[in-house]
Length: 238
Picture: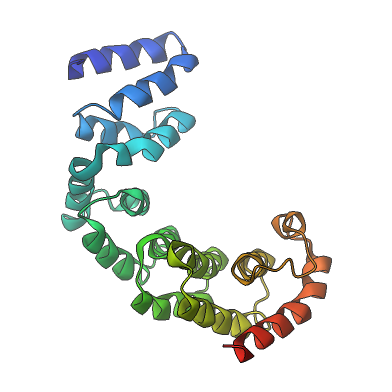
């Protein structure tokens, strides 16, 4: 096993000699090392290559319980607040004993003034949230001023449903979508809602996923009345 000093020398050599092909190999090794704090400092270092930092963040959950405990300590001590959104996102991906503590922070951060922190909180609720968290998703979908937060609230209904295809959860999602669709003006949010209906309702709705991904306004406007009729019929059958 490499020592910390060896990792530091290796990275310096990569940077000094512009060896971009070695960045990924470095990530794969550091994520399996015991040097959790070093990994963390690198992924939030603004002087590091953006793709390198992104890969470091994506792989931090490989540190498992030790990594999760380290990240939670940052939240508990309110350290690096500008990085809390990334911390929460990583914790949401980490499997283990820290799920309940992560959920507590997700529920807290949906009330943050920081839009990015709220976005990640809604995403994490979709990954690991519970039925009682549906009221938070509903509030986010209906009331959040930021389109991305509304979109991730809508998507998180689907993410929660993916975990067990719970019929009660789908009913609650469809009820929320039925209310949101006629009032929503942002086409990104509309595309996410319609995509979620397609998946959860197992219907194509007469619009392609490509059109939704491209946020084709004309096609989205045309399909909304059909989506509302589908939701109404689906809810009547439950």
